[in-house]
Image (cartoon, rainbow, N blue to C red):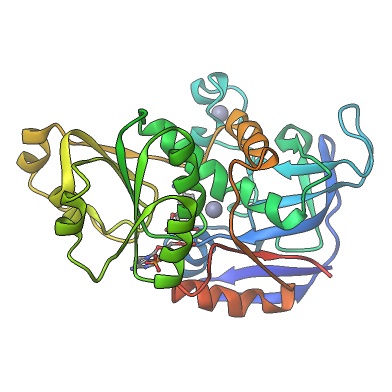
Length: 325
Ligand SMILES: NC(=O)c1ccc[n+]([C@@H]2O[C@H](COP(=O)([O-])OP(=O)(O)OC[C@H]3O[C@@H](n4cnc5c(N)ncnc54)[C@H](OP(=O)(O)O)[C@@H]3O)[C@@H](O)[C@H]2O)c1
Ligand SMILES: [Zn+2]
Ligand SMILES: [Zn+2]
């Protein structure tokens, strides 16, 4: 089969490899679609350590190839990209995303779905509806669930003013999750095409080249600042109100600030990683109900590497999703 293989730092290639062979407790999944997350770039650059060789791709929707007690042959599933140890205090409380010794993490430490097939533990499979296009379901695996988890970590409340900084795969579903929960949303981006889309969703767009502080002031004080890049804190403190929160999802930057600026306004720094399996179930329902729609562009596996270069430049509108041939 074809697979996008990480072979070392800054070494990634399209390869022909053997089809995976599932062991006890695993099934073979035929990939119908797999999204390309910005996290692939961090795995490639070495910012996130990964064992190599490794098939990338953690946003996976596909069909179960072999019948199990729980899944029928041909049934559609989305992969929960964590498989926790099942024993630690995090797994015991449904937070496999925090498990320090996971059995698998698809696309991170275990072969992922930028390929024709992926083998997955049955415990990491969640049933998904047949009626949706695979390309609209793939981003649920990370983009939508990341947005949902971050919104929960932020403790969002109806009527609050949120700012989404960085409009990509995670940013667009986050805008929708926040609007659905009754927040007002400001979207900040460098790209006018993305801002147009954010406005159509119901957000107030601001180009990062403009005077953000002045523009935000006309709307009020920001209660929650979602940093989907990682370098937004200096901007955030200019617009945040009392008892506000900065939520880190992205990590391309440094946290460097005088703590007094935070303390004097009781600004909290919150971080968010991945999602729980229950949140994946919830995210699938949101997409099924049409309450969250990620803008997507479909590509062939042969275009994946070139698409990663486009992503690096910020030139992908929403999520690029690979459809295997
Ligand atoms: N914590 C988690 O669990 C988790 C999960 C998924 C992803 N992530 C991370 O969260 C971040 C967002 O992920 P994503 O998949 O939404 O990425 P993405 O699709 O590439 O979107 C990120 C957006 O940030 C904006 N941006 C502004 N300044 C940037 C800069 N200096 N460098 C890069 N981008 C910049 C770009 O949009 P504009 O053109 O609007 O500026 C870009 O489209 C990534 O760092 C990713 O690794 C974290
Ligand atoms: Zn991701
Ligand atoms: Zn665990």
